Image (tube, rainbow, N blue to C red; front, side, top):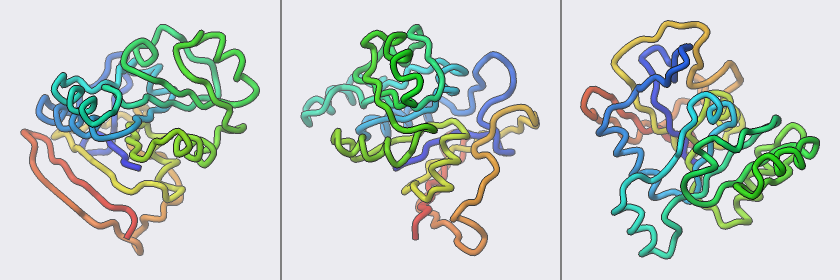
Length: 217
């Protein structure tokens, strides 16, 4: 489980405007594209789909071709989890390859009807259980999962001790907006002052600082 995030120096992953805040640069976007190409699936929360309307693709044609040479589909499976309905018009559902939606039994049929075959919709408890979802992903052959947010999803993975790596890109500016989303929400984290994470890598990517942490020591 690899958590990937770009944030401002003060820990924000977006601002409160209707437009998406670009925190990375072109070189860092290319790094993310390479990481995606080496993953079996990419997970984002439903709120991130609604807020950013991302495609979550491997953009490099060469990297997609390399995946196919290895016997893989050109795009990783796209995964989300939700306890409310999702609009079928989002780019998430209309680009790339396979999609999985984990939801509650209560709205299972409504989500299936709305998406109308654009995704495989799977019941995963009420509330949606990370453990149930991850067990199902494992059964489907997903071995390397890239988690791209948002803050609620990252918080759940970290507080449950599920993250194997954190890829953190730090933009050289502040947001300073208390109503904007952050990398993580309040919680009880195993990675506390008494259990410091291992720094596996730090490098500069243009004006971005990239750091790779290993939460499990």
